[in-house]
Picture 1 (cartoon, one colour):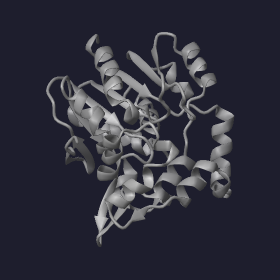
Picture 2: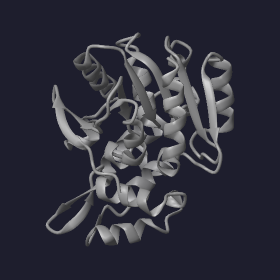
Picture 3: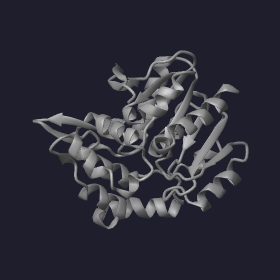
Picture 4: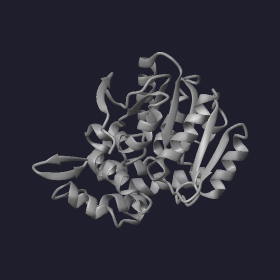
Amino acid sequence: MEKGAELFLVDGIELADFGGEGPILLFSHANGYPPRVYSQLLSKLSKNFQVFGIEHRPLRGGNPNDFLSWDVMSQDIVKVIDFFNEPIFALGHSMGGSALMMATKHRPNCYRAMALVEPVLLPRVAQFALNIVAKWFPSRVPPIRRALNRTDNWDNRDSAFDHFRPKRVFKNFSDEALWQYVENGTYIQNGRAHLRFSKEWEARCYALVQNVWPLLGELRMPVIGFKGANSNTLPASAWKKWKLKAPAHQFVEIEESGHLLPLEHPDLLAAHVAAFFSHI
């Protein structure tokens, strides 16, 4: 199993340091998945890059209701970019990819190149409707309802692993990948294992989904997009629209994978990302 990365602070923002030499690569994680959960992927990339994973606001605790926009995460990304004081490579998964794009509103030339894995690309009307319904009737939004109803603590990490192993969402995870999720996605308190990314924070992030479509065509750096062939999050219609909106981007669809493809196929994704960035 890959070792967990060390954490250090940048302007109050925690970064996981995965080591490596070469250009800086910043990773931005998905809703519910702390950066060290991706250790298999990011350790592979550390062979070619200095890899850091930002820990977004939900991992710092606090009241989720005080979190009003994904743009807060993009502003944290800008602080990290300013700390490095040079254009960097950026890799984002799901919500994390959207946050990376949103950072370009504040720093248009902050990235040398971007790799976006299954970014959240809802139609404008759907995004607006989700935000409204989530505000007044959150239990009627399926991902919010699932998040709030999920089990979030266990007798120990072995019990957590046994709980997750038969879940459909993890069916394409190797045992090693699932253990990475358990080891790096939980903490031990009073002998019990608890999710680091709380279900209340996960639900709040779903409720605040942003419309990033206008940003896609304005990105000024090389971009590669990845889609899981069996994704239930990035539909074929959005994938097609992305290709039409930003024809200069490169696109890769990974077979036998879903929305969690960075955790399902870490070696394959690392190879694609490294190859793309190496030509920049």
